[in-house]
Image (cartoon, rainbow, N blue to C red; front, side):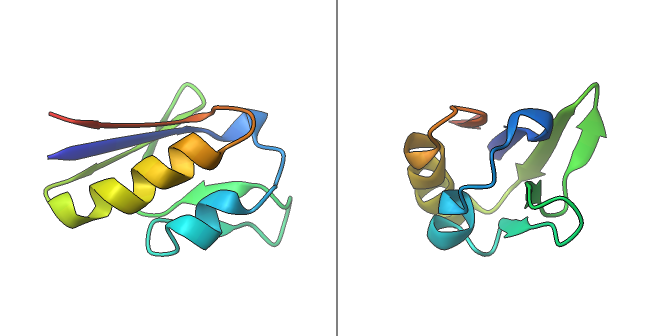
Amino acid sequence: MVVVTLQRNKCIGCNYCVELAPEQFQMSKKDGKSVLLRSQEKKGFYTLKSPDETIFESCDQAAKACPVHIITVKRV
């Protein structure tokens, strides 16, 4: 199981996450911030829990590339 979390309100819209993990992230046309696809929102944190282990690498690269460090990725 892979758990990806995004603090969307702190997003600066740099687009790195979309470039590195386009299956999990896209940019909002409304406000220019990142959207974690198929995620659940709770208190400003958007969380995706996926049994697909293949997304770990691309999401981890996106987390490392994020200049404001608002993406976390872990295996559980």
